Length: 369
Image (cartoon, rainbow, N blue to C red):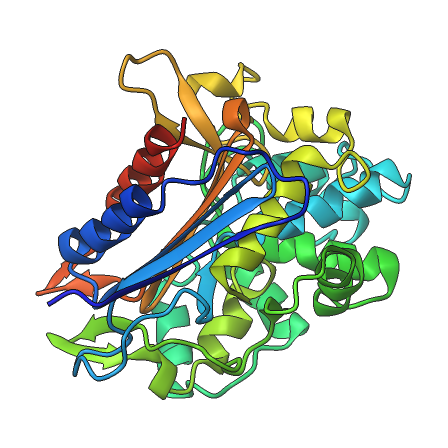
């Protein structure tokens, strides 16, 4: 049995065409069934109309129906927030995209050749084995409640073997690189990345259910990963070590509708990000080509490939941490924001990849005229 619920709201002066609630509920119900996760959430907004719905359950015991207003760990969607902070500092003249990492961390491998822009586009060659590094995994698992300090994070990042020469290695997706960006933003401003998120994004945009923290926020849904063949609820275990290690690359918690609001500001509000800043973030980092060809820009992914092969319909970011998969997709041609979330990262011994979330977001795009 699939349990579902939905909510539709409109602001004054919103466009007349309502969102297709029945079709959208069918999409999230299908996602809960096809992904293998206990439950799923889908939220969409356009022109003042917002729809959010859920299907399935928050728990494997099927005692708590999933609701659209639960909190999720948003994982690497955090990178969009960190990228926005960096671009704001660039526009304020406090930072240049050509500034070298050596200005802050002169002893970091290849620091004199790594630019801020390379870190944003994952082309700096900074080591990629972060949560996947065996030595780091051992440190995390030995004390799940440990909160890594900035000094410890820098030590771990410094010890990762480089992937290649900065600017020549191509795309080498690096969580450690975004942890470095968060540390740089903190050193420039004298504020922690948590304080920067609150002052520059959460408060101005009214994101009342979004937080950067290492403890469980209120209304965090259960999220399941598998260890030694057994499903474990990440929300019931200490996760401070995992979250503090994720840092500016992935320690965000949010609700689906908050992420909709963030996406509209990110892609539509020139007072949040200028048109020039947004255009730069949409430029593919490793080849400098049009981002519509696919790939990774600056803190931004190309999402939802078109069926006819003519490019990509959306920008945004996916994110996962043990037990949680999330996707934020923005479709410019319809000014449509879509958030998709499921509360599992593995099912029956197999990891759940992002394709199920991509398909749900693309289906929502197609369902809305």
